[in-house]
Image (cartoon, rainbow, N blue to C red; front, side, top):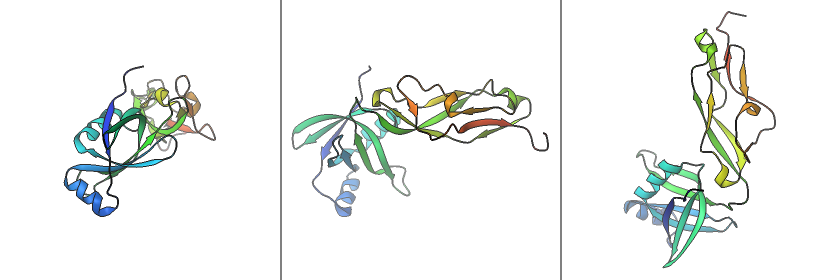
Length: 191
């Protein structure tokens, strides 16, 4: 297991819109950390480190939150949970983090990445993508950051469904049926 990245945050005292506006004016981001037991802690963090961390780990990779509570530091494994952006400026306005137990499965929506040009598209078919993300369940350290699907061998009239995906050990899709992810269909007017 590789070393987890760490984000340093501080417990904040001020709550509400006014206090959050003051934090944002100081280029700080307000947020809430929900630990694995369900308790919530209002926090604040510097903008640049949280932007860099989000760029590196996204919503699917576990990292450590180092919480400074008036000089007492504690470290917790966590995930980005809910992110609010400023409506005009490209920056965070509020972030919620979810604490996780590394031994218990979590449910996360993981993006799908499609690679290659399918044989069916080369033969004149049309590629139809039905899903761009998939809900998965796995222990936090086993969760993939994305699922890569190779389309090279996909021919006209063929589909790739949830059960066809290479999810890895300990990872399972949360789906009530085996729905199609992507397909190559005949061009319009052909049977």
